[in-house]
Length: 220
Image 1: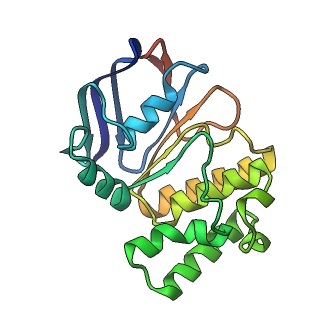
Image 2: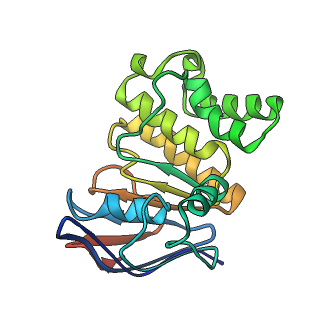
């Protein structure tokens, strides 16, 4: 089953074309990595794929449903139900503890208290953050904040996980923890991943796409 499909997607900001007719598919249970230099359009691609932004032209289909030009409310609902998103700045809510940041999507979705407790504890343990649940984001290193953002995106068990340079602040050991967690998650849940990279850090999945000048220029 095709989880995500972008067809002839275009995006322009203040006269600068960032994406030029991008075509991309992600199948169920597949992890796809998009490689590109800074400024190649990776972040815009992630934001459109995760329904954070609308394209100027083209189509975005999620589980076969045309979603790219839905209302803002419909896009927000689809994100909540189906998509986990990690932005390049791994943004956390500063006035919430690590635990509450990870738990928040589960509260919104109506998970029970014990379900939430188990899920958050499981993720903190897997990412070696077990003792940091009561800390606020300002007390964490950049790598720890990035791991918390990944945990929060995974908490609700999304069908599609979109991550913009998820290893940018992680050392080799932490990267290994994240890779193991994501591989196990994809295998157990038949979930799909779209991740970007500048070329450093691990590659997720066996399919690598190269993005340059706003276009997919090749694949391996």
